[in-house]
Length: 313
Length: 313
Image (cartoon, rainbow over the protein chains, first blue to last red):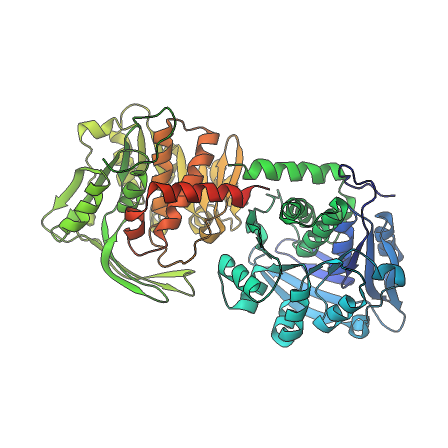
C-alpha cells in the first residue's frame, strides 16, 4: 500500500471517487516543453487524493494509453476498475502553451478522441462511495454520475469555461447539488459577472451553491461557507515549471483529506484547503504528475506546516 | 485629543512623520464621481497614522487649499507645522478615472502646481521623529528628507511608476535606506522584471532592501523579511467605491501602529499589517478621506479581529 498521510483515530479512511479526464498533454511553457505527458483532471485528482485516502478513478483512455502511466496510478494504490479502455480510438489529447510568464494559457490543439463517447459507468461498489470529486467533464455527464451515486455522498465539483458558455443551466444544477464547488477566479467571474473575488463568491452562494472555493492561482484561494469566509495564500513555490493540473490536484487533495478525516464542516474544509494548497504546490514544480507522484508525505506535511507560519498574524 | 487605538503599556506613542503630497483629486469610478476632493499620499498617510500615534504632516498646499480640509487634519490631532502654504500657486491636482470594475486606473489630468517647487523642510522637532513614512514624492526629495532625519529612525518608503522609470538609481538608494518598503505588485514587477509576487519580493530583497511589503489590492499583501514570509488577505469590503489612497492609508496605519507599539520586529510588522489592512479597507468604502476620517477605533478593531478569523486555518 502506498504511503498516506495518517490522521489521528482514522486508520481506515473512506474511499474517494474521482471522475474526470485522463489525457495526454503537450505543453510549452516560457522556458521548457513536455510532449504527450500524462495529464487530465482525473489523473491529477486521483493521485492527489491517494495521499490521504483510497482513490477510485473513473475515466476513459484509448488504445495508445501507456502501461507505464497505468503503473503510475497503481503505484499510488489507485483503483482502476472504472478506468475504461476504448480500443477504437486514442486517448484525449491537449496541446497548450503558456504565455506571459504563465499568466495566459492558449489551447493549440484539442482532440477529444475516446473522450467524445465517454459515458461514466460506476461499478456497484463505486456507487456507494461516500466522497466524490467530479472534475470538469460535460455537465450532463456530471449529472449522470450524480444520478448513479447512492446514499448521501459528499461531492466536490469543478468545471471549465466552455460549459459555462454552452451549458450554463445544467452546470448550475451540478454546482447546486455538489456540497462544495471549486472554481477558478475567471470561471467564477464568468458565471456571476463579478470580477472581484469577494463579490463573485457571494454571488455564487446567492445562486444556491452550498459552499464555494474560488481559486486565485498565485494569490491563493477563498472559501465561502455558511459559517464564514476563509482565505489562504498559495504556497510560495521556489520554481513554477508547469501550472497544468494545479486545480485538479487541489480538489483531489481536498476531498482526500475530508475522506481521511471523516468530517466535512467549516473547520475540516479549512484544514483540507491547507493540505490541498500544499499538494497543488508540488504539481506546479514539475511537468505532468511527476512531482505529485513522487512527493513524499513528509514534504506535504512540511508545506502544510509552512502555511501556518505564513499566515499567522 | 482625537480617539486613538491604545496598546497595552504604551500610553504615549512616539510621533510619526508623514511626508508626501497633499492634493485635490477629481475621480470618476464606474458608478460615481468626486470633484476636487481631498487626496494625496500625505493626507491619507497622516490620517491613517493618527489612529495610532501623533502624526506630523510634511507637505505643501496652494492658495486654494480649503480651511475645511485643514480642519479635517486638525480634528485628528495632526501636527501641521510643516505643512507649507505656497501662496503663488494652486494645490497639486489629479484627475483620474477607474475602468473595468476598478482594475485599471487612467490619469486624465495632472497639475503639479505648487508641488513642482516643493522642498520638504523639517522643523527641528520633526528631525528627531523616531518613525517616518516617506510617500511617493520624487526620490531626490525623499533622500533630502532622509538626510534631515537625526538618530536612527524607522523609515517606511513608497514610490510610484514614474520614478521607477525615470529615477531608478536614486529610488533604489531610498528603498535600500528605508527599513521597510511598501510597493504595489505592479511597481515591484517594474523594478525587478518578475511578474509573480513571490519572485519579485525575493528579487527586491536581493537588491538590498531590508524588508518589503508587496501590496496586491483585493488579493492582500505579502511581507518579505529576514525572519520569513508573511501573507495577509485584503479585508472583504462590502462595497468598493473609490480605491484612491488605499496604499497610503495602509502605509500610514502601518507606521502608526509600529510607533504605538514601539517595536519594529517581524511579529510587530505582521500585526501592523493587519491593522493597516483594516484601515485601508475603510478608505476604499468612500471617496476621499471621508470614511477614513470619520471611522471609529471600534470599527478598526473589529476589522482587525475579523482578519484573524478570516485567516485562521
